Figure 1 (cartoon, one colour):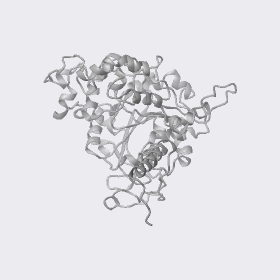
Figure 2: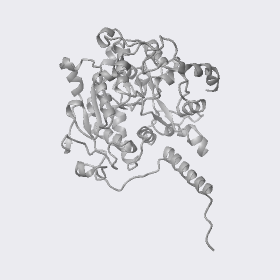
Figure 3: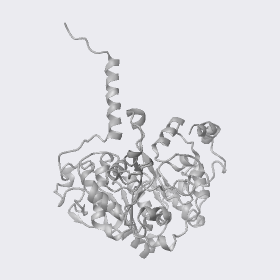
Length: 463
């Protein structure tokens, strides 16, 4: 007698169930999909790139030059020096296809209605130079990117806007261009230029920066190519009492790790694992979107002591979570338990980056969404994002710090230049935008906000 096949619905349910469990496991339990290769022989296009065994194991293999040879050492001052010595490079250029976005009337730019309010009313613009104490700090900016057309356009905009304000600058990619600060950083596991292995890419980037530049800079900020960084505010924050105390005073002998606090929120509702004080450091990590900042001692501790024992062969698209997990494995402890024992909590707990009023400095989500608390997300997703933070998540203009440091999810090079114009070049309209862009809404609230605003009281009462 022939076996009866399972009903289609049963098959479909089983497949969906396995898929959900697999995704949840990837998110929070870091399922290891590693390869057995220990060198760069698993490139996505080895026939085009040529195979070479690195001189040292990853993440200390180093960088390749424009011809694909190992041993390249990047000059991190190239962008800053080029803009200081060549006046033609300091020119703020707007491409024709960017003009309408960069020169849009107030409230009608790509930053959104509430984003415009945040950038022009909450921040003190134009941005002022940092204090003398902050100017003494040397900060290295490390961007992870790829050679796609959009990424290249973003990098060009960054080089013309906030990039030269970094004391050191490097963009880790799959090719090297010495004049633009782009460096080919090979990594373990293949998938070069693919987001699915960004952890190994950043891991090798951290190793390269620590091996070559650790002694030259006080702090290191790592971020993506769709973020705007206000260096003046970052330096002021790094000389604040909170950071100085966490770093052990002048010179920052103790490791400092800071950014926008996040936590793996799926564990509690799905896996029934409660949040308890002893594992707080293990659950927290700094969002890679807005970038995370490491002191010299934190970078050296991470690369020397933690990377060899932490997710060394894991292939994963979340580098920020893994960096947090590595710091959680540190023998160093910078916080005490809140029970009667006051015993140290294992792991390096990140420094709270909020200002004295509790407003955020590092912004992971789109500014228009954060500043309004509304946007395109339904209420349940707002609650999910709220739970994803390591501190109480709030929305509205009051959550935007006047000393904000970074803004993530800038969708194009035009948006990066738009932020530069609003924050640094507000008085140069006749120079930057000689032809006026017609207003569409006359400064009134656009229609897309009417329905969310009507529901705002109900939404905020649930957050």
